[in-house]
Amino acid sequence: MADLDTFLTRAEALLARLEAVLPHPLTAPDWDAGVAFRYRKRGASGWLEPVRHVATIRLGDLQEVDAQKERLLRNTAQFVAGRPANNVLLTGARGTGKSSLIKACLNEFAPQGLRLIEVDKADLTDLPDLAELVSGRPERFVIYCDDLSFEEGEAGYKALKSMLDGTVSQGGENVLIYATSNRRHLLPERMLDNLGATYTDEGELHPGEAVEEKISLSERFGMWISFYPFSQREYLAIAAQWLRHFGADETAIAAARQEALVWALERGSRSGRVAQQFARDYVGRGLPQGDVGGAAAGAMAAGSDDIPAGLDHV
Image (cartoon, rainbow, N blue to C red; front, side, top):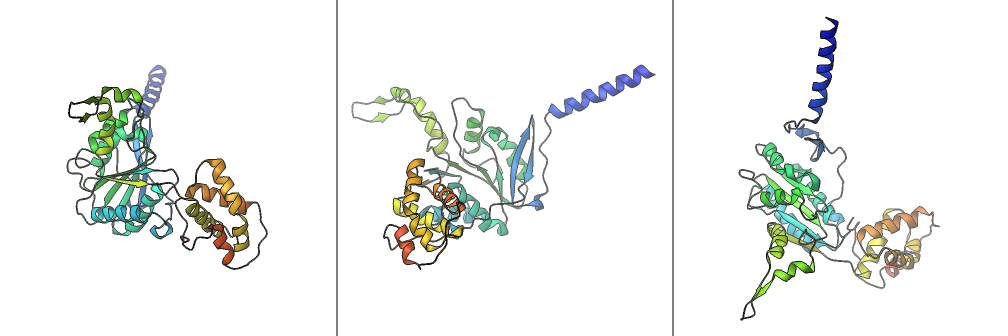
């Protein structure tokens, strides 16, 4: 009898260990727990985790990207209203507001039923399961993948490519994919790829198969939205707004101009993210306060009369 009890105990322990590594079907979360969810995966099992504290950024906080904002806002409004809409690839310079714009759209349309599911690039192979899970829901879901790019042979590349062919999936009219990337074509491009290109007698160019493969994924996104590096004037204006946000007065803002430029030079980038990081450092050092009025702030913008308002591009 003692041997039987020992055997059963060991068998139960073995089954428990097997259950931990065997795949489990994806189950629905508490959809009322939030407006954004993060897809988590451990071993072969995945689940949706509600995001308790969603970024509070609003569309009005994003300046100097009016054209990009208008296009994404229009596409999202069509989607939420149940009209045809496109999957979107947001590409361009780092730190210029690509991810922030998607989060701002979520906050804008969440009261109308928009929901967001964030998926890591490594888990894109599970996109069909996610689309199936939400297919019967009344909400509209944006599957969001940030900083998307692939290396040769990654499994998620082909899974995403298949999902983007036409609609996201058969019967998945309530799902779109929004992705951000610094690469337009999402795969590294090499000089060797161009060796397969051919030219006709009439001068017509036919790209090689390797080139065609690398541009085929991004072409399956129905809408491309491009972001561009900031000018010096735009960067300084954004830095000034972040300095105000962290409590600096106009005297400190005027005095910070040269340091802000050096900071951007050292980072090799004039972006909203760099401007915010500079403002955190500058104000965090505990600078003296004083008020000399708005004229000093104009010096921060290098004499420009057109200074954008709001907290830009983070």
